[in-house]
Image (cartoon, rainbow, N blue to C red):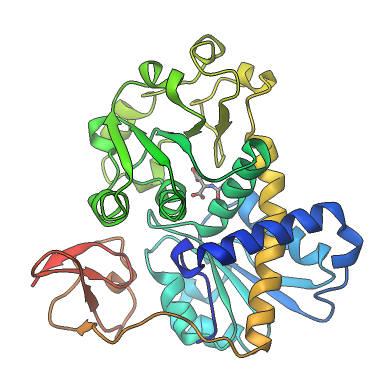
Length: 362
Ligand code: NCD
């Protein structure tokens, strides 16, 4: 396994800051970077739909002077014939220098990274995490606010299945003075493993509420999200919850003058298009920032691979096959012969799956 990025925790805060600085330098001096990846290939393996993430990875590699191979849906890959994620990763390692992978099963990119001999970047796995969207979010916050500390950040919508929310909270937990406001219907609250395992563990200040309007006046950042239809097992529940929050121009009057509105996109109806003209709407800038951050990340990982930097995953306390992960979205539910592995949490007798992070008692 080469140094890979499965979630934002794989990058130290110094590295996050370094990637932001590289991205800012790319923005100022694009020519300096236009041949940095000459002769290198990025493979984009997308087992799930994507517009921004895949194309911005591809644009990023092309702007670095490299080239791109890959597929954009599982049905056009050998996954349709039943090939495992592990085998796909071994095969692609023979063709490319770095992989960006999106998969509906949680932990699939970790399994792939463990089997690949080239670096791998998680481009989104199920409801679990999405570190490169976080990089786009961080650069946008940094460029709009000039800092990543001392911010009140509201997350609104589908906090249960929204993987971008989970990864951004993880990243923000490394900065100081962050206050988190979690705005969602009861059914779509932030998963326990993020609330307890990230927010509470790091002593972050937070509140949970259903009230968007009442929260707006206190926020420096408002992070809107789509209700993730494809993650619901119950279609009626989606229908009931899909219009939970709609940010309108009227509601924006309740926000601060310099609140920055973010959204990972795609938008369905949770932000009225009329808000787009508001100078506080930053979600299209966020898209462009995503490309620069992916350029900076590709450069960082290719450099690390060349310098023999090793991955930081520590599996020394892992318990293997004593219990089975029961999360139907976990990669262990489909990948044949994959050991079920768990690492201890701070809670007595509670272990979390190393692939999807769901908690189980032993
Ligand atoms: C997000 C994702 O795929 O998780 N989109 C993206 O990558 N920008 C958000 C979403 O699909 O709602």
